[in-house]
Amino acid sequence: MTTEYAQLTWEEVRAADKDRVILLNVSATEDHGPHLPLDTDAVIGQAILEGVAERAPEEVFLVPPLPYGLNEHHKDFPGVIWIQPETLLAFLTDITHSLAHHGFRRILLLNSHGSNHPVLDLAARKTVIESEVICVAASYWNLCKDRLRSLRRSSPGGIAHAGEMETALYAHLHPDRVHWERAVDRNLHRPASRFFHLDLTEGGGRAMLMRWWSEESPDGTMGEPTQADPATGQQFLEAAVEATTALVREIRALPILPRRDHH
Ligand SMILES: [Zn+2]
Image (cartoon, rainbow, N blue to C red):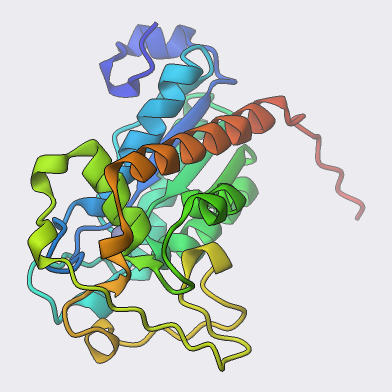
């Protein structure tokens, strides 16, 4: 049986193993510096899920991805398509409730755009409460942070947006679409701050302030794209695929627990 949910017939859905983990990538369509295309987050997120499907073909279904996200703060850059958080939350929970309605019990919302993280977390929580299935939200870089730290060449702040990691990943996946000659490092790391940290391997810091992107970066880049290379991109991808596959297997092993109303 295919891992592509949309290629199943309705009878195949009816007969399918409902403990396969449904994988949904949520990303964004937005500026990624002068050197990367608008679809960077979408390409990376789906590549990770395709890697998981290759490793665990009997354990997952990939539903069609959502290439839009929470990024109105990017709209000073031409090309950005943004979704309001309320819309995104409602859209995501409509998808998860649909899947639960058809009997699927385990869902992973895999985020590949930083600002989606809190919305996906809420969507997973709402799904658990309202549909009573297991629904997990995760951003891929959080799943493989340690590995990213050991593979990286850039300094702190170098992996944020269109920086070393995304540029390397995209260069590995589609070398012909990266405009290396336009890549400029914009490392906005503030070593003096105790709480703010832009680097994704630091989880974005202990406190969160998301400003207008154009206030912080003159060309959309935050990080060190010149440190990127396709070979490291392949290793970043393997790290993300390995960690996401491990997460999928943990989700499959989670018991479905009964509720107890103690009124
Ligand atoms: Zn990105």
